[in-house]
Amino acid sequence: MPIEDFIITVYCLIEEMYLNIIKEVKLRSRGPCPDLSDVEVLTMLIIGEYLGLGNDKKIWLYFLQHWKEWFPKLGCRTSFIRQSSNLAKVAEQMQIELSKQLCDNTDLYLFDGFPIPLCRVKRYKRTSPFRGIAAVGYCASKDEKYYGFKGHLLISPHGATKALSVTSANIDERDVLPEVTYGLTGDVIADKGLIRPFLYEELKERGLHLHIPMRKNMQETRPKKFVRQIMNIRRKVETVIGQLVERFKIQSIKARDYWHLMAKIGRKILAHSLCLYINSTLNPHAPLQIENLLI
Image (cartoon, rainbow, N blue to C red; front, side, top):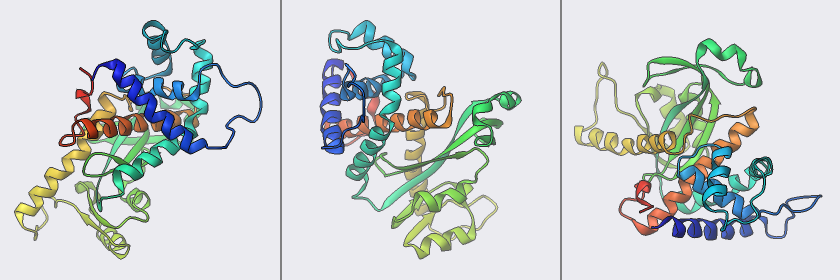
């Protein structure tokens, strides 16, 4: 669709969810309402994240230069950034609602982790705002250590985010999986890093079956066709993580504290979910091909 239609579509969906969330609740206890509406700000953030702009300053500048007629009350950058941050809880509730619509009809989930680096290991002692929260971790894909956090993503087979947990980089994924799957039943597909005998039993007692390909030095008793099938399905979570990294810049977040970091991560997840939701109506056979939303 043309970008004009995309902006209008996102605005309408955001407005509908926003009104359902706030209802009769007053978001601001005192002071005047901002000139730019909350729906406009959230729309700009979603569009900006999809376009790969990545941060508040670039999003504000993009709309100031190209879409000022559509957002005539767009003020200074400071006000825009402050209002964006204050809407973190609203964005979180929107993601919860979208997750219900996109994931509630499935009993199959895919799980994987990915690094969220703050800086290189040599510089981490200077990252004082995150001291005691972040940690040194290891990125297997790049074969290097980093300082920061780790995202633990649980998605549906269609690519919709069901849950995301952000921990310090030294936390084992096997310790996080029971948390992100709490209350769920069905099947979970993960990679070899989740192999832990008592983890299978713990999840099985809760009605959740864990499927992991065996290592080369381990005996595989399952049919080869079944193993190939779960490995092919598991690639979907790698695709989603790739989109979050490359398009939504989830590994390139600049934040001065943990709260702002989580707010920016949350809106990137919301932007991905909303784009997936829109594309699932336009292209139901390949909803994850969100790069084709714009023409």
